Length: 250
Image (tube, rainbow, N blue to C red; front, side, top):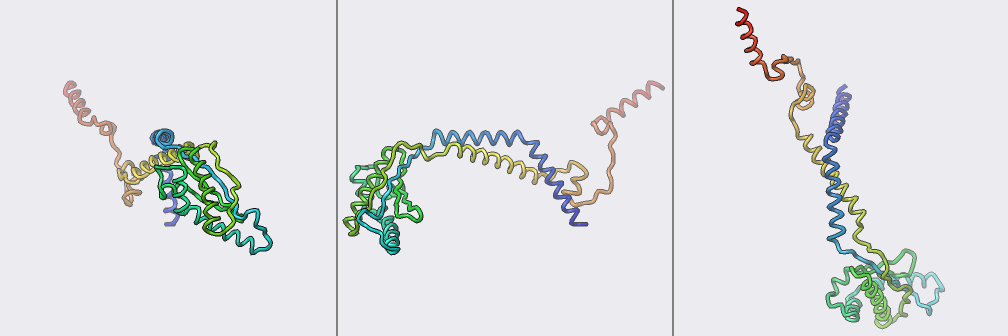
């Protein structure tokens, strides 16, 4: 019986909370729109667009023939080694020197470069992100060239083949304006709902007889009805009018 009462009480609380949210739907909608607009302004006017360009190396050159599973495994291991070499300081500093990137250093350029080795392949993708699409292409191509020459000279291996050059005609990959607007709108709605819910939970004002039992945990024995004059706050004035009428009759 106690469990049933508890379930009913929770259901009433959720219903009241739902109606509380409905009462403040304008505030929630306004917060959703405002934060969504703020996210659009920040994404469109304040965040610099970023472009990506990708070149690709093939680990096994034409002179390498695959005759066994060991050769395939060797190619995979070489790909893992090349990942370390391509993003190493000697290669990136040589790229900076070749392209005369005066504003770049090893650390800043390293943050712009991402290497990817698709599963079950001996292909190494070199992706460069930069606010200038053409510069991103130049850097990606130069890294591929310098890496191929460095591997051939320093590692005593056949140079990997460049199978893909970078491109400079892509759309910006960041920021995603549509996604940011949706996320901003969701954040705005969440904040408004959170404020309404917290205000509702902290409100301990007694408004009805049911609030006495629900908020104070006390059983209500009875209620005293108010006279109509007392209800509208005109009790004293009504009594004064009655006295004047009785004096005139006498």
